Length: 429
Image 1 (cartoon, rainbow, N blue to C red):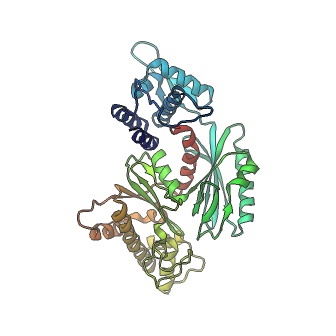
Image 2 (tube, rainbow, N blue to C red):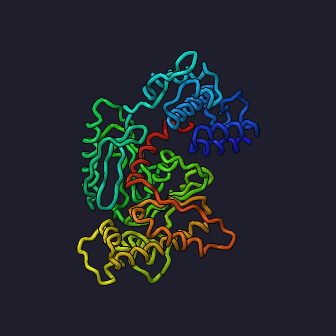
Image 3 (cartoon, one colour):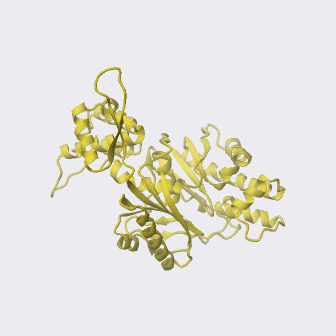
């Protein structure tokens, strides 16, 4: 029973506050909690030395639930907070005062009521900021965002193929962005990576398109800035962005990132799937053809060699078209202006995207697949091809997931880095 309660908490922290409250009540009804409306966390951790009492954990859990309610429903009054989470108003007042003292929450304008005291609305303090970093093979974006995911400044620098030089230039860019924060408090740095890293050591271990190997990225940045540094795979960062800022409430969905390569972030039963070696979701390196083109990972015929942005450019040039240093964005523009060879290259890419997504539908049976990448710019042209490939060839009886292009204007990874830093404060301990 206790194990069920602990597992339940792992899901609760990914959900909207009102959903978490319902989960809490369900767990309490099953015997996992014996409190009067709060989470009794005594089965969570046993610490022989310096153990915190269950009441302290309960208070911390309630505080984070209230903080999340303010985040998702701001502006909101204390009375509405009490109604939403079922805590007594006196308890809400104490929690809110603590959050104000810690500068997480500020008071805003007052509301109007027919009678009685006018409520004061609460919102998150936008003076608490996060530095987000999106590393890609050709360029790196460093940006400053507030706790609501609103970006106030950013700069783009080339990504050096030399990892030592790249880290040095990245540190300089981070320091410039941190200086732009002025008096605002920087909570930490979140970094999105086009590859996989060891969560224990913070070392990058697999990034075939970046071509960096066994690189300690976290330590030098933390030492140079004095800030906490959180790393995450790009596709997983996009999952966090979907949950935190797009408020996707499905318990089972997959984000497919389409760029120089292909990645997949998986949310299963409300939990981000990492795998034993933190390599879960590398569908882009599933081999489709042993005799296919050589992939950056060293194998041949991987899915991303047929369905990535680079694959579409290859199709275009193989058709006899000329373009020099043509980018994928240029290819999309040519297709939108009637270049038939560009259209055919992108159609081929879309067919392979759909075929690869059938693997995901068959193996994971998600409720939704969110597609992130420049291809979504022309979703009206190529989205139906992807959907048809999935719908017409899945196993009989398989539920077809909703295929959704992300409306993120290239910011999903950066927004995910903001959530990556904030979840330490907003998630249950």
